[in-house]
Image (cartoon, rainbow, N blue to C red):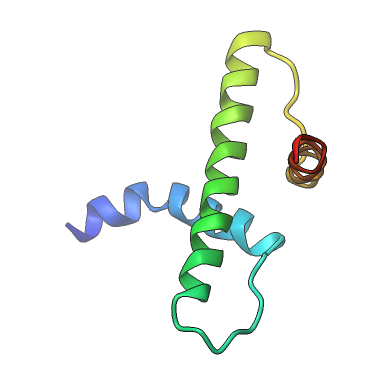
Length: 81
């Protein structure tokens, strides 16, 4: 089991690193709010990873940066609301 973890842990480390680069977490006294921010960060990171993986498979071109993806996501959410 330890060998399997060490062999396949790279994806978890990359996801944690991407999620920690631009956190949305804010201090709060409510107990459920940190869970909300963690779920939001994880969802955005997974969307970035899936989107860039799909883009490189379909077009073969370079992937956008994580910051550019988050800015595009924020702008599109603001425009639709």
